[in-house]
Image (cartoon, rainbow, N blue to C red; front, side):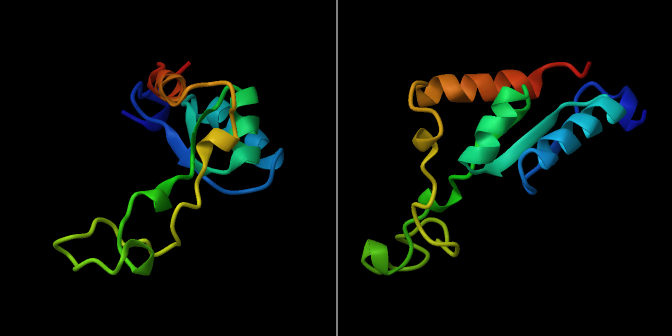
Length: 118
């Protein structure tokens, strides 16, 4: 079974400039008959993907750690989680959509990712 015949794949992406990357993902989706999923997006990409009906998630990696001086230099690895290698608390997904609750955002994302390929 090839990619075009599959009903459980998606193409993940996180790069580029709006609107060219959105147009590229629409072309990939159409050509390969599979949904695309924008990962680790900032607000410009997040909003553009939403407007285009493309599944998307916000970059929020750095908030999932407690290692380093910002957290009191806890003992590694027993009292820490994550590496905080790219900074800390850089993501703020609420900045992208002021009106939607986080649970509704995730339901929307999951619904789009899990939809059958057209």
